[in-house]
Image (cartoon, rainbow, N blue to C red; front, side, top):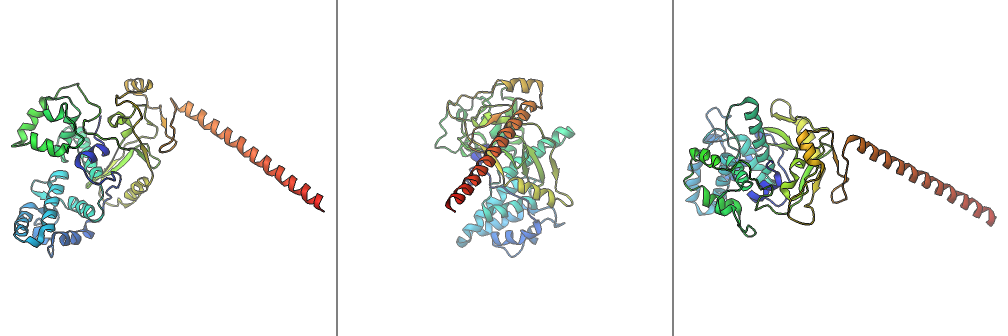
Length: 365
């Protein structure tokens, strides 16, 4: 089980196109644009003393108070509040500091209305990956959104998560108003300790039927670009979270893919951009809402088999599943044979047509 782009998109209610994603831009190219969006001549008075770490929220808060007193600065006021959410909640860094990377993403969002959820997910996975590898450190990501996602998948006694009709409600807004009044850091530990250990809801109660992204380009995974680096995840492993039938995912070719921005990363980012131009989407399986799995999936999961693959022909078409690489090769050979037969038939028909034309021409003469 893992957070997905589609789940975070439904929770945050960002733009409808969940797959119009953020690609990192040069920070120097966007700081002037940010100043224009906030209605100020320049950002230097609001930046840290060393001019590199980010923007000080206390100074921006003073600007917000000044904007509130100006009726004609309503748009700038809303943008300052949005920048606060982006820099302190969705992509947090040092306490009280809005990183330049988060500000950069905010500018891109204002310009093109990209969906920031892929970047939120990337930062979450990178933070979890770092903590697991080093066995230390703290989470530097949108922990509040991660907690809502986690609680939504676990049976609790929380009224808003039990026997609730979500169709005309906003889960994030309800959760904040009901759960986090006067909620402090120490309360997180108590909250997590109260969660049950093994009662899971594979499908969150607020999740809608949406097309799920399975892979990008020729890779069997989805590469994600965050504000500080990049990482990949394999949504095919958790297809049942979107109401699909869980089958054995394609694992051939999966390799570690993560890193932070340093030095020359433009080539890597350009490669990821190209991958995102070719998306493999899966729609929810028709039929019952009850989640099911393919027969071979438990065996693959328990044994850790890596040579079982699943082949998707294309979006919206019938999928052919291969139980192993040998079967996949047999399918390829069969297709090659059929193609060869059709080619021979085409040549034969072409030859017959040519002969008929020759005979007709001779008869006319």
